[in-house]
Every structure is written in C-alpha cells, then in structure tokens.
Image (cartoon, rainbow, N blue to C red; front, side, top):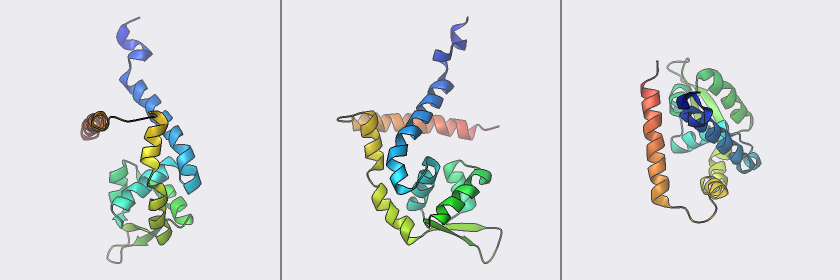
Length: 148
C-alpha cells in the first residue's frame, strides 16, 4: 500500500481526532455552566462583541444558520441571550447577552487555562503555544478562503 494512503499519514484524520478529543475534554468544564462546546464558542463570540446579527455570528463561528438557530434557541431558553428583530428590517435578527449571559463570562474565565492544563499538566511554553495558534490560524484561513 502506498504510504500516502495510510491512515497514520493523513493530516485530516489527525485534525479530526484532535478536534473530537479537545471537545470531549471541554465537557467537564462546560457542563456545570449549562453549555455545550458550540454554546461555549457562541458565548465567546458574544462576550467579544455583544449585539451581533445572526449573520455576523454565523460568519464568526463558521456555522450555518441551520446549526446556529437551534443553538441560539437553546441559549435563549437558558436565558443567556435574547434575540431581537431589527425594527428597520425584520429579516435581520440581533443576538444580545442577557445579564445571566454576561455573568456567565466570569464563571467561564478559567476554562481556557483549565483545558490547557488538562492536556499539558505543568508549565506551558507560552511562545510555543502562541506559534501553534498562529500556525492553526494560517491553515484555517487557507481552508476558509479557498472554499469551493
């Protein structure tokens, strides 16, 4: 068998496993907050910029509206966000944090560090982590820019 067709040599497979395992490791940190991973990244985006339109949020999260709408309904039922139709154009819906959603940010503050510590116990080389994030951003940008 050709080396390039072996599973162990597939870049996509490694990213798939890493993604799945990181999301699994988030679970114990997110469950006490009442969040799934997709709920968490939605809240991260809104903590960064409250009052985004659903379209802006969809673009920020790389999620289609079919995935995002039920997620927003769930977050709204937990009273973390509220959806408001634009008065000028009712087709546009904005998403705002509620007081509960804003307060959740403080409870989530240590999650990124706790997650990294759960994967790499001990001291982390901040420069290496920064370079890793930069490399992942470059791959993501190439993949998203070259969508077909």
